[in-house]
Image (cartoon, rainbow, N blue to C red):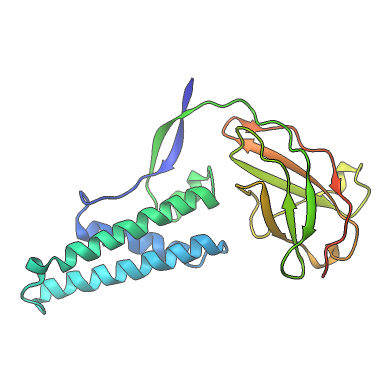
Length: 220
């Protein structure tokens, strides 16, 4: 059984150099300032490739290089911009999953693809927490869950049985694609006992949340 899911439409050599320039210029500008460092880095590379393609197109139009067409400079720069755009698209899909409204706002075109329907993921088990490499960060670990696309985490400094006291982990992001992740904590959650709950997600929805785990302190 399959269903339709949104994906970012890739570009290729069937797009004209001007189209490639405009598309890569738009998404590069809209993502290079992202709070997500992976997206921002790929957005900056896309902007750089777009600028190089623009300059090549201008040079060809102004005949600054009489051999421009023969040497394939525009074509080479177009290939670079296409590659940067498509890498950025893949990064956005991974780092900001299942968010077509945001993708469209960033300038991407959306298409659809068949996705096999999965059962709900199982419960996260064997969770543990260690101090991260930098003060104020925690490394979250748990067993991988079958059929999970990503994970979310909640944390509390209160009674772990009081579910209302948990807050969502949102820094550096809200969804984590691996069963080990480094997260940043608010200042008032440092140097106090913390308890955690984690949930696996996929296109079918969220699995059952884990039992509370942890209990240790994260250094500030």
